[in-house]
Length: 395
Image (tube, rainbow, N blue to C red):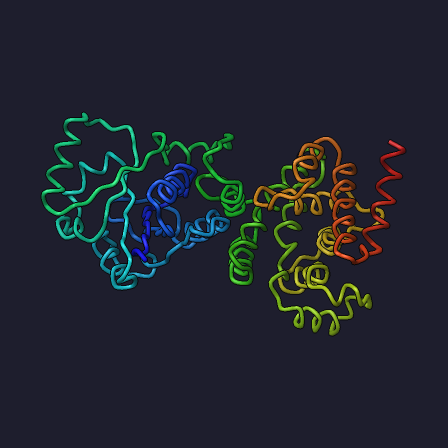
């Protein structure tokens, strides 16, 4: 069995963008990597004016959560002082003594390697995976530099992929100006908007406290999902003239209890008399909505009844759902990171046109899936479907 090949993509990630993701995916596939580490810089030796390390770390975790071979790594963040590639590779060699380390660089970096700290030692610590980028240097200059570095012990492998040229400065400017861009994942865009980063205005007053707790209480996929739901709820609220802040807050907190053990959910439900419904109390997939609504009030300090109700009914739905209830329910089912299910594309197409039709289609699909497993849909879901069908028939 051959050595494990570990790719390494370091950078400020200010923020992580689709150019980084494209490089990482191409390296995984074209260079037979077993996994790829994303290493955000703590204090880059050549850059100033970057976002706080904690925010950049959370965005990297969220943006990479759904690719099993992507692995965020805190190694550089946990070191004090200026970080250098030499130190990182030395530490990684110690952590993975039997692995082959493969460090991703752009074509233009070939001409800069000899300026790196202890560069001649760096050459022997890893294989460089070279991703194509537009550069001011000629092909001859690049080849000559490459031959020189190989003579000193360097090893290179080209990553076959389209040229990636993304300006982080221009991306941050687009964020500040609220210009649409496909270079930033929706979960990162949501995080940035919540916090008011890169020249934007923070949309949630208690974002620092809330995001810190959510990041701590949820696993990486659930945290990313939460940001995706908040992003989608805000877009749906704009389209359907629903209060945007209420939708965003309810969506952000809708799964705040999701990662609690079922026994802990049951304890909270019993202690605070949240429900007498045994079918709810026996299922974490359903009970977390009621417990989450309770936590939103008691832990996160939310007092708005509309928000609390939207959180409470986001799993089963109910008859006479408010537009806010429907926005949060629907956002949970169609957010960008949601794993594909049979009706997903159809519901995403309907969602901008009709909340009622989109929610009804989703609920009917969920009810059918539950029946296929030999169980009965929750009575609140069936009541919601009947109520929605009547509204749709009357419209």
